[in-house]
Length: 291
Image (cartoon, rainbow, N blue to C red; front, side, top):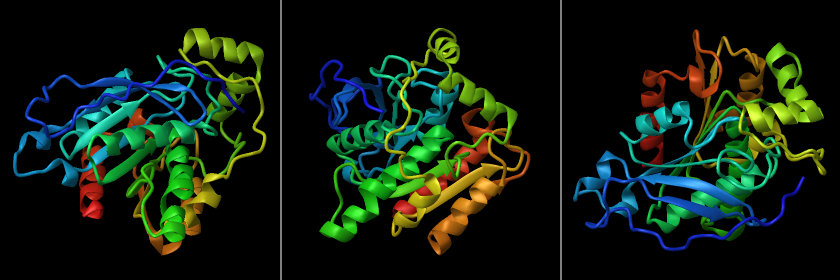
């Protein structure tokens, strides 16, 4: 799948620990490597106002939402507010969602959207980046880390500006084309049928690309062995109605000792099911692992 250019990029950014920074979150349209505009919001977090915490050491969470979400959805804002207690936060709308341009490729070229958001976080002065993704976003952070992160460190002995330092994947699938649950069969109808894409556009504010993947992207289970040495946390609910627990177990097995697996009792799927206590634990884990 591919999408054409849309709009332009804003390149005038504030430094996060500047004394002139106010408490209004800056909003920017970023441009991906394939020319799609991505709506993004930066929130400096409570720690940024402490003069003893320089911006270069201030962890930033880059949050990748699930399918049909966007930066203004209440459940995405709730996640951002929780992580803002542990660092700065960048939220954004994937292509085809909300005010972003292009059309959704349901996890394929969305890796470019996440890379643009991570670059922006580093341009704002942050040297430590934690990517946290939910559902579709959970698969995107895994593939992004495999493609931009540790592989670049091994080849070049350093970190690319689009790389993440810590990776958290919540409620992600392990493999593509899964139809084993009723909710996922509905998602496939939404994505593959013309009438489903109309429902997505007008009912869910999500514009979905009509083309099949070509080539099929690296699957999440193929991606996780490539993430090390970056710390990886896999979080999944044991009552997830979309992806049963064999998915996180497959991911953890493929990652080996490089990953931690949290199977959360009673938890359902993605942002809506992630309670505040879990988000706080994720925030604390990311801070500890980022160093």
